[in-house]
Image (cartoon, rainbow, N blue to C red):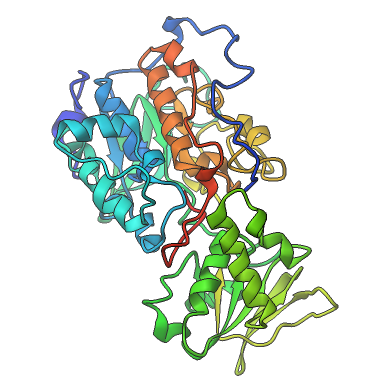
Length: 465
């Protein structure tokens, strides 16, 4: 593995895609401020080994920036060949939160010191702009670049000389990360682990019960999971009948882009009781751009340019000579939709815990988030505008000094905001470095309403953040 020798033997710390109500998540986390702080001696971070960060996306790189400023050794392990590999798949999409809320404070501090210029804060960037103008310059800083290992897949994590069942001296044992790079397996010792791998690479299936079937997997070349760059895939969808599955902003944006192509027939498959639920407030929306999005899709449906099936619960996919047959429970007794040539699935994503089987986790059985977060972020109760800020305390697991952050910490909940992940890692790094007051004081600076808005002045927008 291409890891600097200084990291392997480091003993020093020298290394450097919503409610319209007013956002209620600004300010300290309620219910935690008055709890007794742990004694500093209870912080068992073993500084003989670096902190291991998994995933070089926005939140993983933010963790590296905070550790660098704190003077803590770290190593950043990235499965892809470059930073923010997952963002490449939706780099054509424009975020609905402006630059002001997409740049981590510690990262900004390091970048400004290097002569970097902060983009105009009010502009909404695309995924490509986030990568090129922010994440790549951040990863190339001398405080971070030497400690990133690309093309490195973490296949397992445990505690040195301990399996999951062994408790004696467990907290004092370093973590062991098993990694694979170019067919070679290596072990890396770490004092703490921050899992920032996200969920984008593990999309949900299209079936109503959310179960993967062999039939769906065999149709992989006919199903696009995520937000396709429809313009660049013109030949794939032109003259085709396409089913868009999903009822959120990602599905709506996909439909709006598909509709611009020549001779494309669009079938919209949702689980909502009424398609009107997807329109939002339209002209009454407190956010004009978001309201316009609902109005545009509403108009297309009224004009008959989109055939809507809702609620439709998919139970079976079958490839036939006529196309893909989608079967299930439909709104007026339909059990089969017209055959389609292609499917675009905007059905969300889920976390991957497969490499954490030897780690003692506390995961909510419903949301699949960090357990303490579940009542704060359950999408049945909350939107991204009502989730309270949270930090190290809420992100703890039974395994000391192990944290899941970013989108993965939210499990299947779709309400994650990038700024939330930045505050998560700031609090965690503060705790790991002994600044207990800073770790507990968790605040999130978000606009009262606009963070969940969309900018329709661009061709592509998303509810990804």
